[in-house]
Image 1 (cartoon, rainbow, N blue to C red):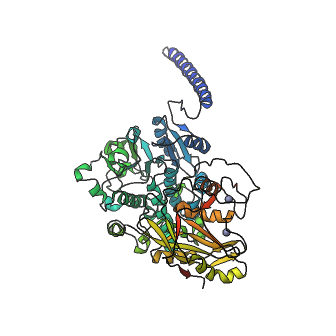
Image 2: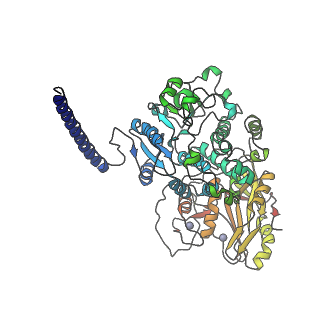
Image 3: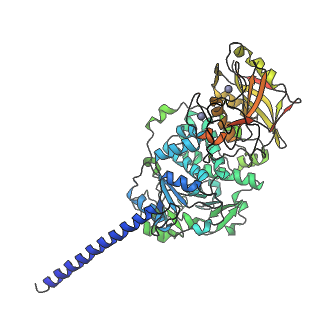
Length: 590
Ligand SMILES: [Zn+2]
Ligand SMILES: [Zn+2]
């Protein structure tokens, strides 16, 4: 009993001490967070954690600079803002160490809005992608394309900062192992990029194309073990191969490009065509394919033990536990089977140019274990064309509703465009097939297709799809027939053509929106408008500085007003009429 009282007093004393310590800590934290909110967003004051930013804050910061480095933004994604306990803990390890980085956790809803507003050309595919993992896979490529930065799956733990390795780099990827034949060795769960890198567009085009050409049965199987192939690491791998081969002008495998096997160490840092690959131990550490440490390293096992795992695989910068939580994490797709009737996305064909045939053949043999029909269109877009232009905040032009839409007479940033030759007989040929509609004052529309010779394009075909025309509109139907024709005849889609039976030649608000995806996928794409009544033919493109940013951010449908000064479209200056070309009409209407 004698010992009891002093120890009780001691206990009280220490409780008092702990209590006051907590109070003091709270006061200090409060005052520092008040100070933080007053700080400009550009200076991250806190040194204990990354800065969580809203999308608005992220956009403001991102657009305030021109990027010649990897932006310090960490992207993660989950169905909502509530992470599971261990996800939150692992996510926190990045935030605690990357104290001068921004951080955003993207929810499913935010992802949807992001794709819809920033990537309208991908949105119709995105909406159809199902189950959810296909969207979660795809949207990370879009973060990389738009913002760049660091994308991390939620089952990665940071051991120590790796961003010293990002200096002067363009793309940094990680390896799980060097078994490149499996196409799973470069995971898409940890990605580092500067904004607007073409690698991501290759992957996105591939997704659009495969989805548009897949049968219902194949789409169903994209979930049953095919997600890796369709949107996952294998899509990253194929995108990489196309990028490397088109930029290196080689058909070598990654093995060959990395030189001899001695280079391929667990902590090697390898570089090909400005893409940096971090060896297996540096980022992923645990290799689910080798099975070493699976019992304790796989977050899916009941025997999972993080510390034991780290003892075995000895990670250097980061480790992943491959929890594959996406399956049950993101929204479930019970209505998938009802959503199968997907529209064909004929626009994807535009960007696939039939060059590099030999490389393509070798690629098919080396890497592509997919039905030949799927690979047929996957040729390499040239890097200086067909790249997606990122929607920069448009410069607000003066608003003048009184003016009629007028094409711009000058072209400013069109100097890099390849020329398009148009057959001189295009107007009479097209008016001939349009005649029946024209007589009834109904529009007719078609696709301009052709081929590439040397460094220019020539239009050789007009493909007229099944359609439903009106006095000032023309809706195409059964676009898949058009896709098949263009693809099977090795044609490139170069734009579209339509008549204005009762009006002059110009691009209406609906025409501007119709034309946008063409030009987003291929800078050179043109819109030809023919007015039989006024005996006029014009060749238009959207102005790159005004038309593209305004139309791509305009969410209105049907006929509506746009600002028209500076002009949204202009006469295409990169076209010439060629009397030596013959225009062939492919009429799919009957
Ligand atoms: Zn029109
Ligand atoms: Zn609009």
